[in-house]
Length: 167
Image (cartoon, rainbow, N blue to C red; front, top):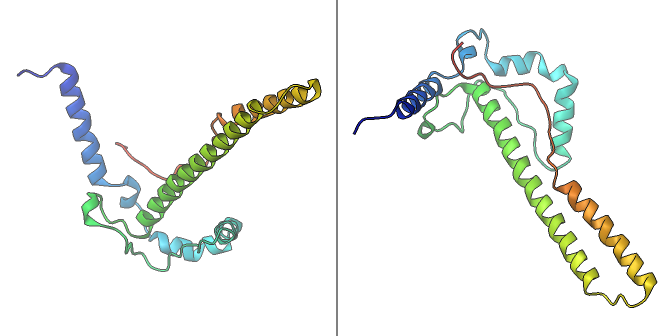
């Protein structure tokens, strides 16, 4: 069966993406010192280092160290090159982002369910007196505003840390 132009283009993009993934980060070829040396030489004196350590410590997570230019958790099954400490650091950022996203989703769902429960309780409440009805309607309006606020997305910005593509 003959491929359509769109199928040829899709296959081309897939091949190009696979080659880029196997080639790794273009900055790996120009780096003159390992990331672990950079962290040891320059980052410990940086205020961001202490903030990062303190932020992780306050939730019971030990801050990572980059004593050597190794990546002991790298697996050959991933079809990506072992890039040492910088590869480990990049995967850690991705893992932290994934964990933060999932945790934020769980917290959001919990709060939305609790709001729904509170609204349901208010709807089933005896609202025969005008004062009780007014108070219940005000509370339902407040809960609706909170739910609307929770439906919005957060956006955080931080420096780009990966380089992909042809440069």
